[in-house]
Image: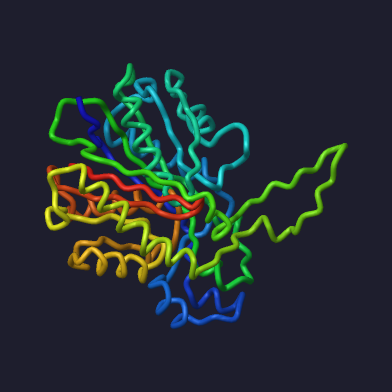
Length: 323
């Protein structure tokens, strides 16, 4: 039996913030942002939490598949910006859907989160579970210092997801590669939780709540480790890089994606991109891109896809998938 992607969906908050809008908040320009990132605009929540974004996706998915919520066996939400530490974002969505038979949990591997969650879903389907939902949902705007142009220009809010089932079909995860690099974790941080209690008061900088990034280190990591992860994944298959129909990389920065395409010596036209409209939506970026590409009929059943996420942790993950 194999993991089959049954449906895809995505949702973004209606408020669009352009690069020009950001010039009113910080010393930057549309040209500066575009040339360094390819980003033109991003969607920003005006009150919706990650569970709200994910719930919109979940309802779309069930409606499209004509599945009942009761038929779900599991719900996995990849997020680094949950509503709260407890309950999990997945549990909130499970409750709102009334998917009472589904186990639900969050997974945080930052921008690699959707890849990690999809691998976990595949493992669950090897057991007693038949149907599941995997969602990447982020409200990164609450972790951004909107006066810091080194990070604020990069991130956006959104959610994307898929329905999966265990089915004998041509669709399947052919190979995977997951790696973590904790010694490099300080290159990208956000959301520090200080130790504060009746017995101890940690002295901490309030700015530790917000994104802090060593841009050069992250760029070096992505352009070095992502191609290696992809090559390790390909080595587990009978594919060559030229056999891949479409490459769906985490939409962090257009320059990074172009550099990876060059490293792999593959046509840039095969690397799908929507970073210009959404910015970096972390765990939501790959499922949003996947859904848009299927809806536009670029991606067809039976095609070979390479999905690769990279980011905070630091982490990287790749999946060779026949859609």
